[in-house]
View 1 (spheres, rainbow, N blue to C red):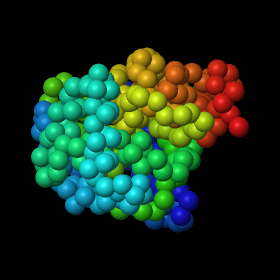
View 2 (view 1 turned 135 degrees about the horizontal axis):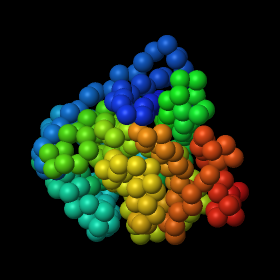
View 3 (view 1 turned 90 degrees about the vertical axis):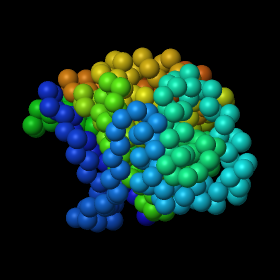
Length: 288
């Protein structure tokens, strides 16, 4: 199955929805059900609850990463620890959450860190994906929509979860589709800030953040502009593209490379559509 799921979250002005709909590519009449993991409180407490509820799936996820890399957890864990300084610079709270995750799932901190660098550790085939955002000007109902399909192998359905978090420190509530043990992926926060993504290539790996913690940090923003500023200030280890929308109807698209970012403005102001090709003027030279 070339496409595992498509995820669409509508962001409505003034009243963002928290519903996530996941559709199987082979049969659009069938809804794939993923385990719901809910956590609240401090960063450590949220991690602990996540780990305790999803321990079996986390173990399965780690086994998958071992299998696809041909490396054992000792080697993977040592590599994952090199990303700790980048995550700490982004948000020290995330390392506390990873420590809670490890304790809840009864795994080591190193193993919990492997989940945060999956793409960098496993170096899987490019995750194709197509992402979009459309403002109310381009929809019949006048609502802003954003979403993506997800080009991952069917084995990823074995450890996918819907993670709903209620931080106790004032950070926004959020719901994200992610993989067990991974702090964040695609989704939306209580302000209607949502983001989706697709892969980009032709970028040799460099020291920097993996994309997953950065995606989680975007859920702490209140507007599209804040998200764009955030990804502009933090260097990543690899390339990718992110599409954003917010509860006020704002949309944006940012192509991300280890050396910097480029904002893509579509030829129609009411939409942002992006596949696995560089379309910004700044990064056009990297396209095959």
